[in-house]
Image 1 (cartoon, each protein chain N blue to C red):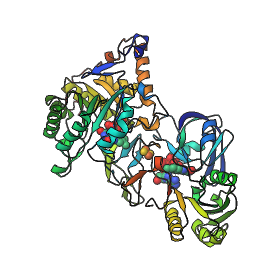
Image 2 (image 1 turned 135 degrees about the horizontal axis):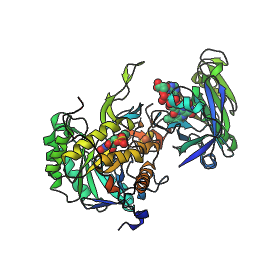
Image 3 (image 1 turned 60 degrees about the vertical axis):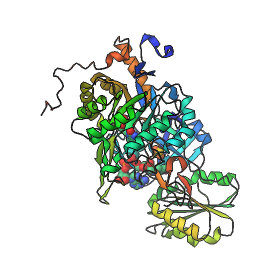
Image 4 (image 1 turned 135 degrees about the vertical axis):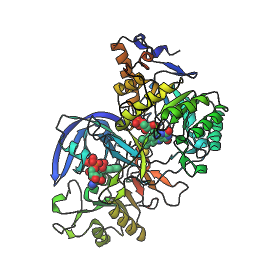
Length: 322
Length: 255
Ligand SMILES: Cc1cc2nc3c(=O)[nH]c(=O)nc-3n(C[C@H](O)[C@H](O)[C@H](O)COP(=O)(O)OP(=O)(O)OC[C@H]3O[C@@H](n4cnc5c(N)ncnc54)[C@H](O)[C@@H]3O)c2cc1C
Ligand SMILES: Cc1cc2nc3c(=O)[nH]c(=O)nc-3n(C[C@H](O)[C@H](O)[C@H](O)COP(=O)(O)O)c2cc1C
Ligand code: FES
């Protein structure tokens, strides 16, 4: 049990698909490395969970510089899934992660469905991983580089294939770069996903007008940070209305109030991404801020916030504001 | 590496558009080595969003100095800091210049523009280690020249208003007799074009050389993978500038 974390009688912990999280704040993939870079700075065991950088079968070098650029209230990135590969992860990073008192979720990226399966199999063979998050915002080599995540049939097939190989928590991380995210949410749910992670970055770009060159080596990249929060909230709202499985809200969360918005629109938990670069302790502060908010509002369980939005109109995928 | 709220001691203008900010951090002041940097959150809100990295210029007692040009969002906020303000500082970060090794007798310091930033702390280390020092710095004009806390300095300006009419690299070549036969090692910081020229000169003359690089960074300590530096003939294509640099042996990287 997590008695130590039920301070002042407010329940902060939650169990999702059999995994106990001591609080509802996790750190997002690609924004916390493999969990071992911040130990000098923060007590990472106070986080609800750590999602690893996306892991592929073989190590990936990633894209040429420049890979990042700051934008108004956000940043663009084009890292290119640079990672050490699943085998080095297992030998060099997992032994440390096992010593942490927090949930460890391995994020998987791949360029074919077989690769997703192979990475999951390699991870499944080891102890210490509580579940998987599947990054479907990856180019599908067979389909000429089109992202898996923008084709609902692909999302369904990836989910089904992975579901048959593991009983652990399986969350599909959806891309916001689609017209109706609810379609993708249902596809993943119907194929057996335990949860959805919503959202990955939005496609964006920037131009240096003096050189006429794109700001990123890959021309376009992924937008993250506070600038995307309104979009993320709407996507989480839409997805959570479409499915019964829990939705983990992600996108521009900088403080507890941001996180509470996500919980209210229907997220069962949240992930903090870009904020970690500015403050590696952001996730822990946000978890504490949510608890304090509950205390001030006489809520006994952070879960009472989930889906508590008081909206006058019913949700409609066809935008009612048009 | 620690993250702490540090008190600003003062901000002082030292040349045209160039400022030195001094903050108080007993820890950073005592452990920082020349070539390392700090990552500063210049404002509490989201503009600018990311921290800004700055080379540590000098340390004295509990004080840490950074030197910067006012060019954009972050530096404009920093120049307005008042003594007593608090700034959130992460550091020290990165791999220092290898000033503590014994593979050289003369430290040859080269700085172009604000590339002079890490030279005062480097000078202090070299002097304390009783190495000889030759310093070559270049700036656009006399008005942007900063030569505080340097020793044996040669100056070049692009417009000829002080010292040699030319660049720091021109100086380095012109005065090579000063260090060439005294087991030199070059430590350089400045614009990419200058570093390129310094590296070419060092390699052509078989002089060991380290450069300090600059580029976009989001985190400054390895969690974002945003700062690749291309490696030469290694099994890996890139190193991380923030974690494996910002100082690199020129033979390891493609500048
Ligand atoms: C390891 C490291 C050490 C650094 N050390 C120092 C240092 O000691 N002193 C220092 O002044 N800066 C240093 N920098 C650069 C510094 O972090 C900022 O990039 C710089 O202060 C500009 O930030 P800004 O927010 O003011 O400008 P921004 O708002 O980010 O940029 C405004 C405009 O200025 C341009 N620009 C960005 N950086 C520079 C630059 N350095 N010179 C000219 N134009 C630029 C941008 O392309 C943009 O067009 C260092 C960077 C790194 C990675
Ligand atoms: C530099 C960077 C790298 C990222 N890498 C990954 C990744 O490897 N896998 C993944 O699923 N998401 C990755 N993301 C997306 C984040 O996990 C998150 O979904 C997104 O940034 C939105 O959240 P934020 O606004 O809080 O950052 C990355 C984001 C950034 C900024
Ligand atoms: S700046 Fe984030 S890894 Fe280097």
